[in-house]
Length: 129
Image 1 (cartoon, helix red, strand yellow):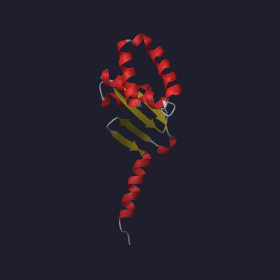
Image 2 (cartoon, rainbow, N blue to C red):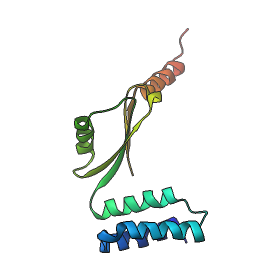
Image 3 (cartoon, rainbow, N blue to C red):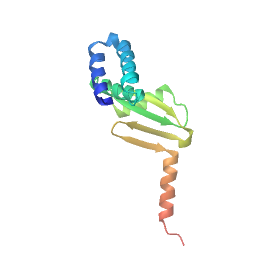
Image 4 (cartoon, helix red, strand yellow):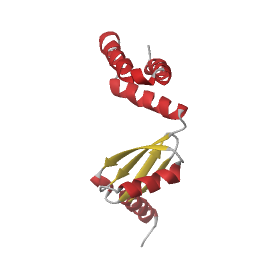
């Protein structure tokens, strides 16, 4: 059994019986822990959420920011990516400023640390005597 197969089966059941989602997930978690302990629950949840979003025409994106961002900023970023989005926010002070936006097949890194690193690379490549 793989995460992909288990997730596909759970997705089909959840789509067919959305009112039983909680029961389906509880039974799946029990099955994973008892029969497939090497499979990770978090990977199953992520894959199942991806499957459901795809079936509903929703693009899942992750926004990483150095600071809290407003609901309005979140919605603006989401609308630039796709008409229907499911957005996860992560705060990472290590990026110093700006944002990193990731979807399944794309990444836009507009963080300050990324820009600093690009300039460092350019500076190091330039031969200054």
